[in-house]
Length: 362
Ligand code: PLP
Ligand code: COI
Image (cartoon, rainbow, N blue to C red; front, side, top):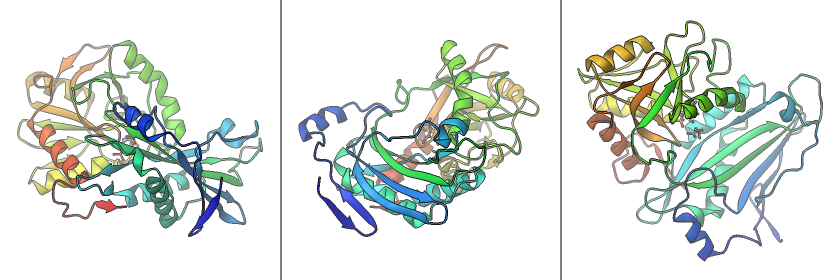
């Protein structure tokens, strides 16, 4: 395979790339996270040398030493972001600078080197460009997964001296099997996700590893996602396994849990901004599970929704727990959820004006 040099990246095209007709077939129903494109980006980091060996190369397995630090102590972080094919054929990403910034913050929390934001952006753009044919049309998108892991072969417990940064891409349709249908949640009453001083605000693999047993419990109870309550009092609603949560009240106001131990979602921040611009009173405040049940039952809560890059904006229908079930509104979402979703996806896909400059053309 011939390599060519573009800027600081050495680019090697995949000579065994998936054929166009087969790719088109795969893109008809991409689902989420099970299809991958032909290439990946890798950049190495070595203490004392910095970032080096920038490559765009055929997607392939890594060869890792069995003592590789990430396999033992989980020193790893990741991001989730999307590239969209706009109506005129151009390609856009949504607020990628925010992912670059959050990646640097996650790195700091996990005692890892922060990749410079412009290098993160360049890496992601290189991959989007070389695998642009993999961006599905219609409501699909190309989900991008930048990640960084400790690659030194060493068993002492300390920050690694070597790291691999990688970006892979996965054509995506709806995250939930039911598409835009309202989801059912399971409230975990004994597993928690994050404590004060912990890693809840970082996007590190360990947070997700710890969430899996609770997510498994949710599935066993016929639910789509788990909701975590706070670790100190087991009282306050925090977030779902992979999404932030919003509540729409009957006076038109919106409540969402405050930052601290939750992931500072970029979708969350965008929804708050869009809702406030519409004159909606959005409060970032503690909200208890007991209050949620009471407000849903009394009708004071009209709608609730989950949001994130993968899930976009998805209505919450029913909430189940060991203390019984309750349904929000008519169990099928509502107008506020729908209008915020339409506005957000409209901006992401270039169909709605973008006053804040969130859309980044590739
Ligand atoms: N909370 C968790 C735990 C997540 O995994 C995600 C998804 O990335 C979010 C919230 C939403 O974050 P964002 O909107 O930046 O995708
Ligand atoms: C994302 O939305 O990007 C996430 O990382 C969440 C995960 C459920 C896929």
